[in-house]
Image (cartoon, rainbow, N blue to C red; front, side):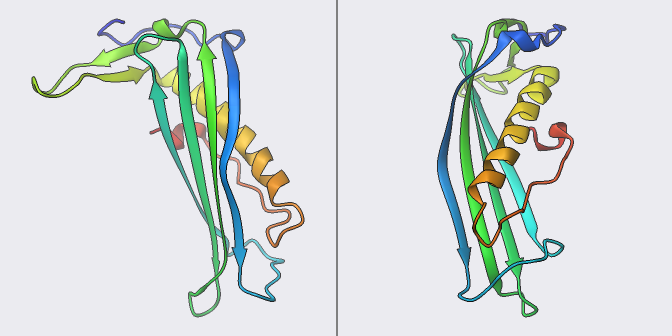
Length: 156
């Protein structure tokens, strides 16, 4: 690992999805509620990533929360999904660097070049959109889909 940020180019053919696990999938609604409008549906997306110091694998966990409230701001529909993605990146060393320690008691932080982060987040988010659309079929959220976004906006 180097201490300077690398200048490599992302090669898609060197990125492999090792596994995808849905660790949480819930849709909850008040009794008798049917949703036919997504205009007041709120959503939030969070990610957490882990990169190994010595291997070429990484894990990205994407969590989403959906919520629709009634006119009194009481929740009538809520849903959450957590999906874990494990990747193997053949040339990960070209993108991995160590952020300097701030003090002696602190462990150095492993960082990844932004271009690789954006490429991985593009894969994670677009795949999660399809998984969630499929998982909500036949529920009160039937037809709801996460919007298209800039994947750089959810890098963590």
